Amino acid sequence: MLDLINLLRRELITRLWGDERGVVYVEYALLLTLIALVIVGGASLLGNNINDLFTNIASYVASITTP
Image (tube, rainbow, N blue to C red; front, side, top):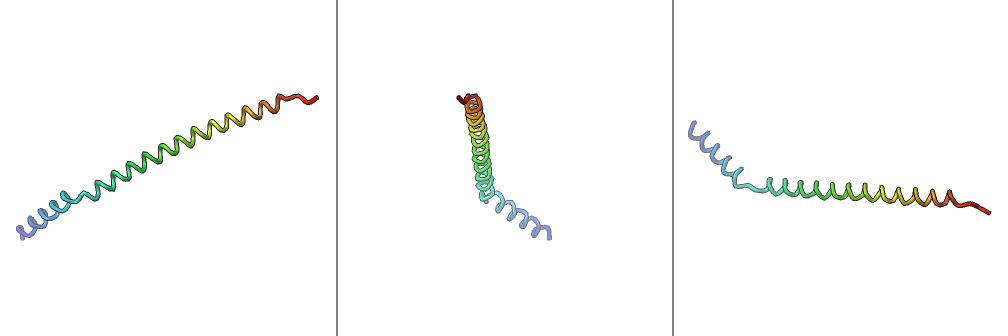
């Protein structure tokens, strides 16, 4: 019985050690997370710039006096 447990343990360790699919999935997940953070940061920055642009346009239009 002990031999069977040792055999199963060695087989499990060999399979887990040799299987790199999990590592690849983690790398892809980290890469996608980084891309998502860059997109969110860029969208936030772009949104702030567009908001400032429209605020400046609104101030300019409000300061125009009509004859």
